[in-house]
Amino acid sequence: MNSSIRKDIELSVLSAVVFGISGAFIISEYTLGGTSLYTDFYKYGLWYLVVSFVLVLILQDTYFYFVHRMFHHPLIFKWMHYGHHRSGEPTPWSSSAFDLPEAIIQSLFFVGVSFIVPLHFLTLVAALITMTVWAVYTHLGFEIFSSPKSHWIGKWLIGSMHHSIHHRKYKVHYGLYFTFWDKLLGTQDPNYENQTET
Ligand SMILES: [Zn+2]
Ligand SMILES: [Zn+2]
Picture 1: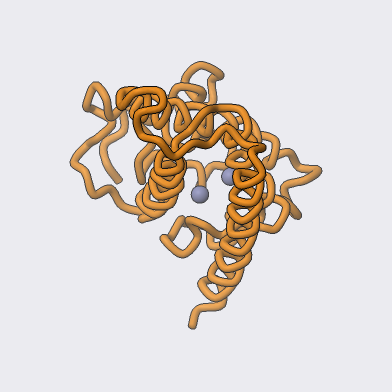
Picture 2: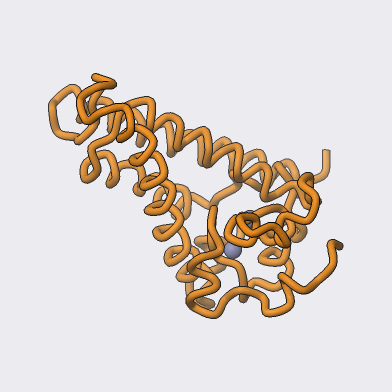
């Protein structure tokens, strides 16, 4: 097996363990009444399930953007984020490959949000599944949707080509789901929306 894929799998297993420990912590705090999680679908209304799901994605995207920019600081990149970039071009194997400090910081988002935002358990699970599936999609290295960046909503979503550019250039495209922060803070590759698919 290619050694870079082997390393990506090792880091992915490590990350899964970290997320598993965080999940166990959240559940134990929930049983002690310490979180904002709930299990009654009707507690805040069915509409809130959808609103809170979108809210979690927006909050996670914001958290991810800023910690990701921090990870690229030369003083900490080598030990906090290099593992994710080891393979160069993104591959699905690298989608969850995080060095231990990065895995802890990424999973802390879910710990924090469980205490702060009232969330149905399934909303939290749906956000975790979305994160995992989205990460595989953005690390395919090729685009499965035709020209998403020329679509009015596709411009605001991070797809495979958008994230591939991050793996090539490092200094642009730090977001997770949405291009909002990259556009607002000038870290969107100025040529991205004009380029033809590569
Ligand atoms: Zn990065
Ligand atoms: Zn990546």
